[in-house]
Length: 67
Image 1 (tube, rainbow, N blue to C red):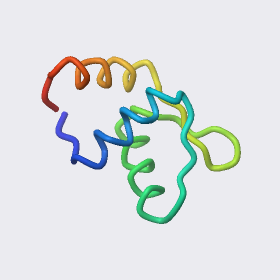
Image 2 (image 1 turned 30 degrees about the vertical axis):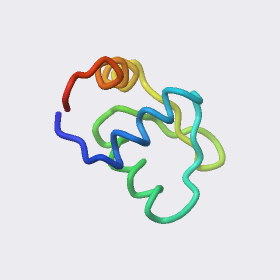
Image 3 (image 1 turned 180 degrees about the vertical axis):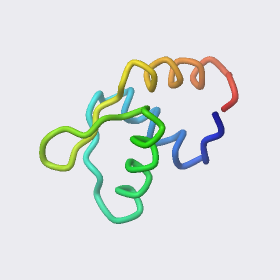
């Protein structure tokens, strides 16, 4: 699965903090793209949390795997 650098960063941050809230239009678009890939899921107040699939990919990215 090919992710942009921004998508990788946001996925890793979401895995680190366990919950992320889009702050502006660009971040919202990134989270929508991650959601379409099944890596995050929406929660209340326009927030997103990481899915099991996203968590596994975040672990792979942290361990030097390429996406």
